[in-house]
Length: 40
Image 1 (cartoon, rainbow, N blue to C red):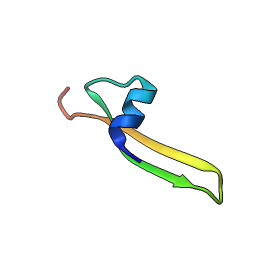
Image 2: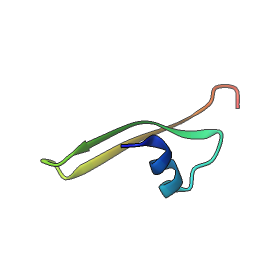
Image 3: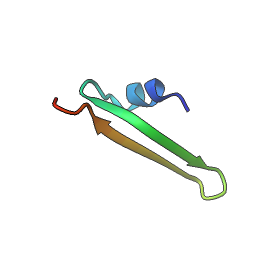
């Protein structure tokens, strides 16, 4: 999935950003990792 799409859907703005996403159809699960720029 596109990270910028997820960031927009979640309303994230700098310094926050999506760094990883994992989707499992079998488990019906979406995991999203959110982080921020170091030093911000």
